[in-house]
Length: 180
Image (cartoon, rainbow, N blue to C red; front, top):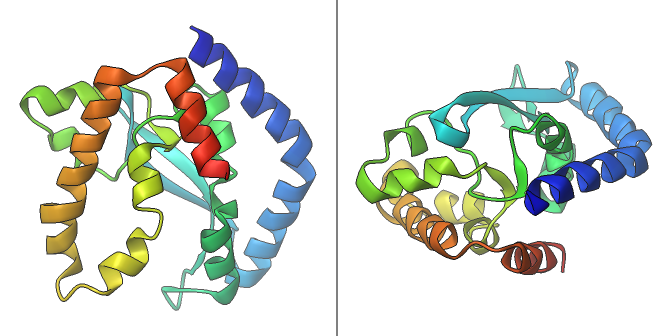
């Protein structure tokens, strides 16, 4: 209950404070990609339910490459700001397993399915550890295989640990580490 109140109040406050800068970033992204600067994608949420995640567009839709502006947004994590809307809608939390595309978390078996009882979050210990995941994958001869055999199982392990040891103080530590 405390987590839900914290998420709602903080998301509302941050949207009020960051609303104008977020609209400016959306406008600049729209100009940069010459399309809608908001990126919508289906992700797997709590209880395995799909939801639409909001992010700022970083990939040019016709060229299918990350733009220079998009690289800046990704490095600075500003592309994640629209997920405050997902938090207000109750689809996400500030802390929890990062929501993945269909075919990963929704396919978990056994004990690992406990992760699906958690609301996905903007940050987690796994998100902090793999904050440079794109770079790490780009260095691999077979990025998909490396993700499926190394990164994803490690994230599952870390997220299960979070499931068994979650606490409001623990969430605050994760947020502190995320910001600083």
